[in-house]
Image (spheres, rainbow, N blue to C red):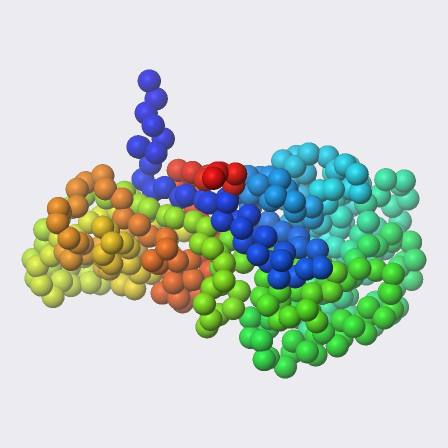
Length: 371
């Protein structure tokens, strides 16, 4: 008889679908009357695009964004074919790679057209059931999107069947950054060329810049998954994940003994160490060496030594009695030490922590409809 997957797992990742839905509803209320989409690219920032999108669609979200064609095809399979008014709509931010326009039609995916070659290819696609496209104008990111000159010069625009004009803010997480207003002004100028199109400028942090940035559609991504969209202020969103790793071994260690590769940590006194089943192969960044922590019985336990591929070591000397046992779980991400806290200790951002979460975790989805 097969054992319980949770019992044999080295680490467990719990994903709270109810919290994701609650975050979407909060963002939708803040952006109203604008529509609130959901960005579920990169497998819903590492949390599972299919279960996340299904929960959001059930809650009322009718428009989703992914990054690539393959992501779009997979999400269409998970959500099913579009029904009235092409809902649920799925847009592909990177647009169509050369020669793939017909695949967009087959899966009823809306391309975000970013450069003249994509405009030309989409305009040549003469089929009755072609989905509406979105035009992306670059207003200051200098990444994807048509320049103002390319937008003005494009001869294909009359045949695109476009529904939205969109752009992307570079500094929305810094509310007083002058580029925010410059980008909005450039976006308004581009919009005047296409008064019939709906408009979308704000992603997660942009929702909190105010109604002047909301236009017709907002596109939150990381904020849905608990990453703080207003750095430096209290996070208005609910935590979404809990990550715990199993203790494989406990070891009493003396003062002066070293821990891990490179003998990079030396004990300054006797202690009790717990080796946990998590490492950089699981997305627990090597940058957390000597800096990260976990929680055991409500007590912070520091990570000591270097994170290795499959293992990390924690000093659990301060944990209250009874002493931890082999097989117990150390909480690594949760209410006390959230995604943004982990990111700060790793010298990165919450987006990278989420999207790095590995495939070896046993995943538990807490349902969105629980009471």
